[in-house]
Image (cartoon, one colour):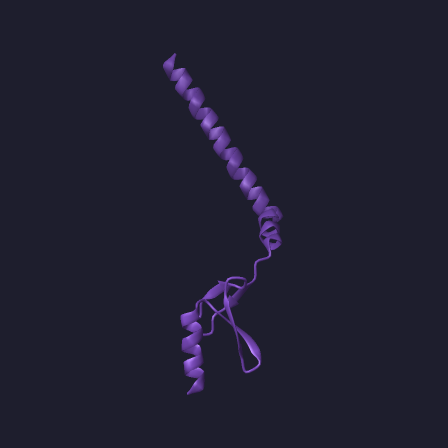
Length: 86
């Protein structure tokens, strides 16, 4: 009796695992994951000092030689300004 219940639980677990696996594979094949990522719409910018990417809305913005530059922190902006002066 216990053995048959355990086998039934195992079969159900296997069924739901395979079902989840196939659904996620199908979503990836149809490109649904990519569409969701595109809809989010957060722009990333490259920090010219430390070469890291930062969300544009959180970046420290400066005008350097008439062009906008974005930094991950105030410290990076200051270091870049000091190097630019020399």
